[in-house]
Length: 383
Figure 1 (cartoon, rainbow, N blue to C red):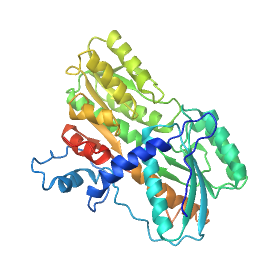
Figure 2: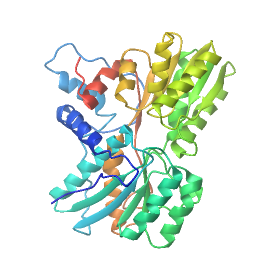
Figure 3: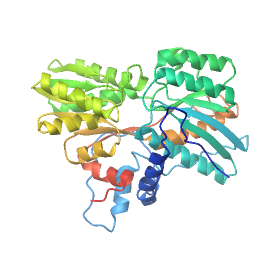
């Protein structure tokens, strides 16, 4: 019988209730309405939903299946074992990683249909901590997992532990949002996830600059200091802003993926900069905190917000015009492909012809016109 474990270690929060909620809202209300489609990276606007209800599911599918592709099937590959035991740890308990878990769940179920059992643990702390991640990896290493996967919290801090465990014979991959690559001196076997975080930050900044007609003061909310995805996005945004003489970053803070901290920082920005024109928000939590603070201040018509990902509240702000654009990652595919690559790593296959060293997933810039369709697909919100 197939089973896996989302249960928490001591001191950690369980995400099982969140995954079950998303399974109900996404899989029942959303996935069954999708038709075959392929995932591709796009920028630009989607078309509005039709008024006619007869073709609603078809139209919603056409708008969203290139952004989050739930219609995945396992690649043609015959696993070498009948049962696998994996361990995955990531930055923090958060809905973003719950969406990754859904892809893992579906991949494991498809393997089960082939008679292959995928037993895995998927665990994280309540707050980002490189030291906690190091402890988790070290403790898991003595439990004889076929593969361990880590969404790196801090490259400099975690890389030595990864390399030590690799040298001791462990098979370790990175996944999700943050890699520790060969260029960083990390010996991890492969990475599955976002390989273009710098470009995501640059794309969001470019969208903002164009909207502001290349003139104005901007504040930036980053996320977790040392997290490769957040640091890379911040660098991409800064490089774009530097191209335009009349654009200026007047403040930048790390909110640690916390909505309340993002809210507080945004209030400080507003108090210090009466002429603030825009905000760039570089993780899934901070567009929500920023939008809350800006709407409370009554300045939603003055300040352009761009940000990352698919939080329900953020999508509602996008629908209502408070947020101008969101870069939505295909978290489902990240999870789905992580399981596929872990199986091949467990079988002793190395990157090359069998699979790439880096499996690239997509990010799509979503505008107001596409928000209603994404809310329906991901959260079952029908308007």
